[in-house]
Length: 348
Image (cartoon, rainbow, N blue to C red; front, side, top):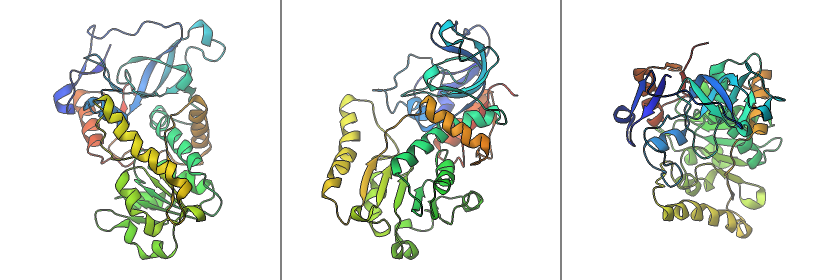
């Protein structure tokens, strides 16, 4: 079958190629998983961290491997235990838990625990874009505990998760939504009240925000530095100021050795435990959830109903060729995507 193969850890141009033929066999039917014909695959930060070899303690696949885990497609085979829920021909989406593989191929086995039916009215490209990032957006706002009238700042508003977070925040009653982003036009189209381009201005120095502080800051892009800078524009813990850390320390993760896991998790864990002593500084909340079938279905239902737009990067979808896949990965690693980056594995 046709598939993208990673030959070794490294940059996309040196490691990824799309091949076709018998070199990559079609997956055999499973007794516990669905076999789908993949229509589209979107990229997530976990995909390129695995490709670069940054988290081999968690993701250390045997080479060569097929990258990508966020997919949409059509059911080709249903094991007996799932026949009450699925049938051949169903349109579905699926994602991963700690490490996604197999998505950039014509066929893939998917875990029913993280798979849901794609509602009518949503395309396969939209399904692949939504399945992981929109599910995370729903869970992140659950963690934030947003309330009617809250003022919310989203750092990384135009990324794959951020484009849904800014919309969902408004849906949940935020009275004011601001974003740190390089795409002011997109942010305004999504209902954001004010956007700060971090290349030109420092978001923590905005006088308007210092005078009327935020109830919630959601950090999707920076890490520890954002936490250290947030105090002038975020309410204190006693006033219900919440800093939701999706990026805990740094955007780039080095997880090649077991001891590094402690270095990644202990500092933010201590920040959270220290909340019991906070008065004037904000409350720190780590985000550690993973999409489930329920959160995927919730996100898809909202998108199908038109509660929020599905934002796909203007350069996507890329074709399922070596050149197209490399273009998508390089764009993703450079963090230049505005919305989700999607590859058309098999055009609709």
